[in-house]
Image (spheres, rainbow, N blue to C red):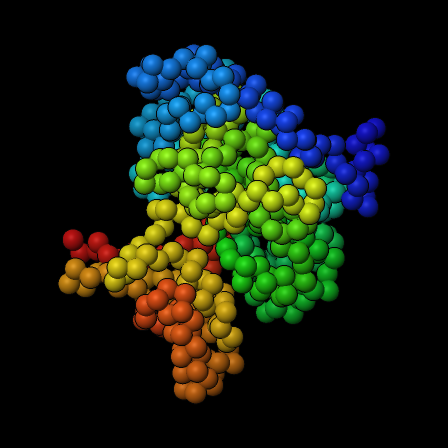
Length: 446
Ligand code: DLL
């Protein structure tokens, strides 16, 4: 009944979003209560966590305030690999109703577990995510995140249903069918990775479908870094509002943080996921506003609590209140992962900086890759980027013009010159999920 009153087809307030607006003091009280419970649970059930607590002379009673979280040991990705597959579970298998896994970059996947309650919390935070991107009952959500061990598909699916939207579980891939369904089913909202959506835009155009003329109004994108330039491209080409959502398997999947109508940073659902920003070198906590590594503690997870998990994602917390009225803190968009960085001639480079440079140059397409090689001990970087058919067909003059402007844009952002290869439209591989932007050949032939 309440749901019907509040979550009408005009986009009224959804009751699931109520915690987004908790007064600060009430929020902190919830956080402390949940923090103490989750620490006690992990201490009792997870051997690795208990032994690290004991090494430091800590017990669950050591947590008397939120600030005491700083005494707790960190958890890192290798802890999940070292205890593969089930070593960090805090629930018996009989209470685990779902497993997901993330392939990671090397070796064994990491496995994550959910109890029925965990799935409910996940559905709730994903409903809050979709609501903050402007979805409501009556919306038709095409869910093009991959279904399977990846958390994107099922996470968005449960969230959409909890919100009361109509979910189309199409998963990733089969782009022509995606476009037919957007058009034929009057789809109003779509979620996938931003790189896959750039491919849909391109294919729609080839098929003679103008996305701007369709009812599609909202895009919900995440699972990989993307820039404001990419957002502007997507919004202009598809005639939609494009929102950034963030999450990671180890913490829950998507549903950790989401943009709102203001599109100025992502609100962290901090009643379930407690954020800290640390100096990645020293592990020391950084004051609000400073850039560092995001560390998250799951406050309500049952099957696999994560205490002070080091995400390796680089961001900073925004302390000013948001125009949307949510009291949850926001973080800046994640353009950098500490393990994505490479060093070229002494300069630290992140792939997102290259994206920012090339999207600022007219005549390029948002399809690119970065190739790293090593030559006589020196790392080299080449950028391959597709140019528009007009530029490509004009050959010498237009190409040289784009090359000059692109070289300047990259030098301006990175401070170094790199090798540029302007390639034909459609010549680079398209992704249906997370794009692989960096091809690292530095250790080939060793
Ligand atoms: O990518 C969960 C997800 C699904 C998030 C759908 C959003 C939408 P993993 O496969 O475990 O989980 O990858 C998590 O992806 O640590 C970030 O480095 C990166 N990432 C996720 N969202 C964003 C984003 C899912 N909006 C890792 N911006 C994270 C930048 C993101 N990076």
